Length: 316
Ligand SMILES: [Zn+2]
Image (cartoon, rainbow, N blue to C red; front, top):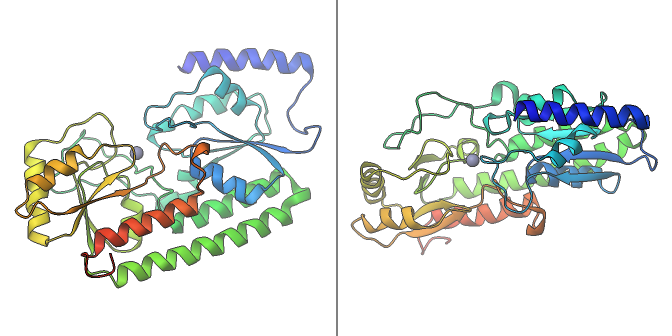
């Protein structure tokens, strides 16, 4: 992959040199912005409005954990004014792509770098199936409304630097959007504070570390992190079923894009076998066709959380 990216970029370089295109100013003065995942795309859409052409690379249900850029994708990045990416384990390909970008004025923005020392390591959860020995940074950083505020600040600043003419507009749009994030953040906090239960049990992978930590929720999960093609052991199923019984939780969680099989198996191994199965959307493979923005999806997740943290009689 590394070599292919280098080759493609060398070719683009020749084309750009011949055509004299430096990629700095576009004829209609619109910024060209490339994003990797849907939350980044939606934030840019909110902040840039109609002042930019925005590309979402991982569109149409592509999962970030298995994505590799196509030739066309690398070309788009190479000619962008601003490139926004996660900066975690799954997009380690970015470094090579950036090293040889045609547009030397490209402004890369990494969410993990923006988060700095607020980035969290994946932790070993009790009773989970371990995927491997080495500990990695949890890259699902967008699943925290508090992180999202930092990212929108950083995006506004990056856009303002790339296009000083519209700097005030970007700042204004970001401020408006951030106040919506803050309102939803407060709603989450209130919901958790008044909830009957304070523990979530994921019969699934676990990309929600940032969200659970934001509101002091306890959690159990079948897998520490978010590797795809894994099956839970019988020990894990038994452990989680026992936890559901012991804590008398009203629900078990599954995440978007996974079937209910594991969650169902865990429920079937409990004494009561009557727990709700609730879905939380982690936006790992959300595309532009979805129609809902980041805030709407986080709102739906809050509704799901309400279901998971309250028994039928209380709030559900
Ligand atoms: Zn993931």
